[in-house]
Length: 141
Image 1 (tube, rainbow, N blue to C red):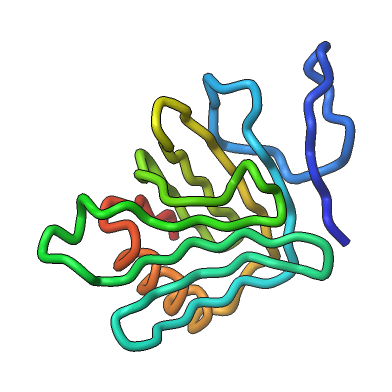
Image 2: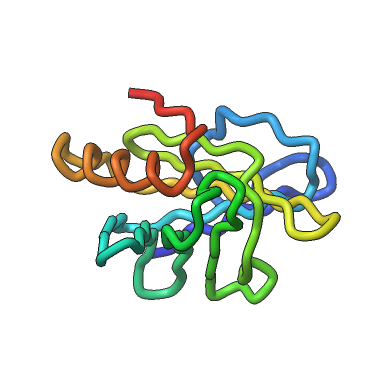
């Protein structure tokens, strides 16, 4: 079951969800809860997907040019406002939480994804792939 969390005007949460440890200056931070996280590599392409039956968010990157860190990353979601090539400004990963702040043109967007704790090997694989996709990611173990 997905838990999409929106804040009402008075600051109360409309739906139950884990408490965020990220402070956001942006009022439209998207928050979702998913049941699974997967990481994959195919040739020079890397992907991490957060999903369940009702929603998903993925981030991809392919090593195509020499200037790898400056190349935009590709994000995709069932929410059309989170699709396209973006620059990653900030990202954090923990055993049950992923936060990313991206910039597309002049627009900055944030998404926070919660998920069940992963076992150590699953977490290490997601961590490894995300460190390739987002070299400046902060890992909280």
